[in-house]
Length: 151
Length: 144
Image 1 (tube, rainbow over the protein chains, first blue to last red):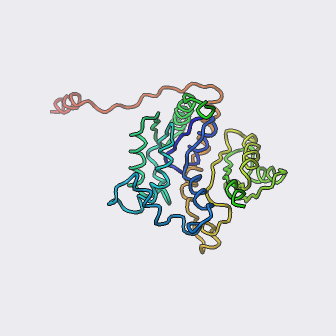
Image 2: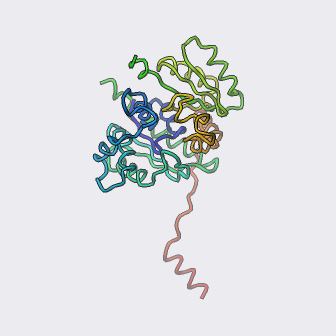
């Protein structure tokens, strides 16, 4: 089972596909759950505390807006442990916690910089594109090693 | 106590099936003997509880129509105050737009998964190439 980071990091389709083909999706949702269920002063409603941007300094310089660094403090550790990645472009739906364009660029950049297998693909708009989308992701996931956690 | 909280997860089950209704899925969850909480929503259900129990229930739900039921984890519990619309004065909850956009693609993804499982090969489609500069030049010249 390989740890596969997905972009958009909260995608239902990608998270499901990675799990469906026997791997572990590294998604934002799990990190958020950890953050809000850990007992402490940063419990809800404060999910992002002043500590976030400090942790984010590992991934972005100090002059980068605090919002980017705060987001990177959640996404960065996921990229660090990723063994493979699926990046889906053309996501016009980058709303909410996905809506920071600079963080999205930095996330994609850091994933591409890492020496791991990366599949880059576009969101499907037609039936034909949908077939190609599923086929490419399935073949990519099947080609990944499955026994890394047995070591 | 803290360990109990840590081990609790929430999963969103999105139903995009012609044969399974969100109600059927909810009934299946109610039949479960595990101590889990569910919330029925317009797109399916949210299941909350201990990790093992949730995974077991989700697997049962998935088996009802494997390629047309989609699952992802959710950070917040159902009804969490910071996300629940009831406490925020209405409006879509954060993350709704993304989910709605992806839900609209699910019928297409489901059909593609059916075809992939059936072993149908992907037809190589010719992607239109960019026009070569020399060709473009020729076209311009010919018009002159």
